[in-house]
Image 1 (cartoon, rainbow, N blue to C red):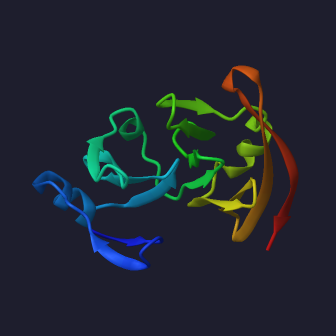
Image 2: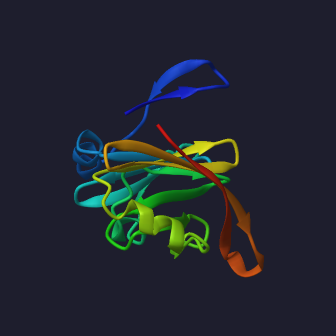
Length: 159
């Protein structure tokens, strides 16, 4: 693996362990949160800490398939099509949660063949296909006391 060092402005090789080499070549998702690189392979999720040049396995993160995800304020978001929820992973507490306030809206995504979450400023944009149309929803996030994340839906646009 190679990373770009913004201080030296040079690409540097990163030490990997043999089991990590396979994980990196089969990775199907990648995210950066709290200055760490998170990867998802078919058999595990791993975290790389550049400051310590250290790899770790992230077991809780691996409990979900978080492909087509995005990061807002160091929290990972993805549309879980199995449970039809917007799931959120907090890397500090190493736990998954469900974003509240979207149940009625997400019912519209049930027949969608695909969905993507994309960060847009401090918002999450959910793109999905419904009856040969692409729908787009801008979701404003609000973190409440106790870590609960609620939303304000800023409208849905069809293309």
